[in-house]
Length: 179
Image 1: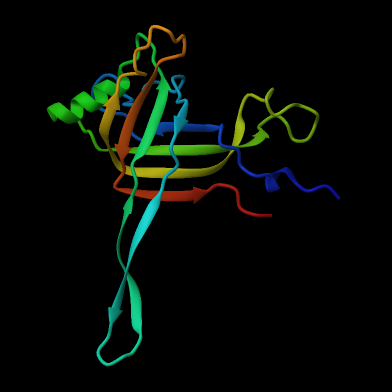
Image 2: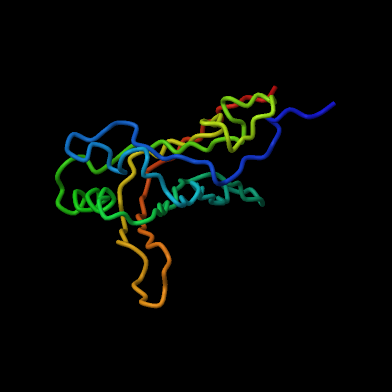
């Protein structure tokens, strides 16, 4: 008996990042419209602080968590002449107008297309994919912006902008429960 496609491993090239709540000033979505997308996004990383404490007369130390932190996340995308949304978010943070802390939703999709339920349609031909995991990046703020790749007269590569964001916390949501 063949295994179900839900047992396939997630692939790293199907993802989408969006604002949970639009901002009050133009552009309303701090990361641009949904069609702008990203070339890459570093995965959320959470680190816990673990301390050992020697209690009274005990010979052995007992450990416990004393805190935690979320690592920065880098967003990269090709530079377009009309897209300044990453810079606008950074500028708003510098100037202090508008709400710079944003709740963002990062979705990782499976290879299962919405229209291909094992009926011969290629996963690449399907218009939409089934979401597998999601992360809410709580109170993310921009911390570093790079306008594009370094200038090089000998290169014909696409210029790629970078934006580092620092979430306060991360929540992981598993969207597909095991069968």
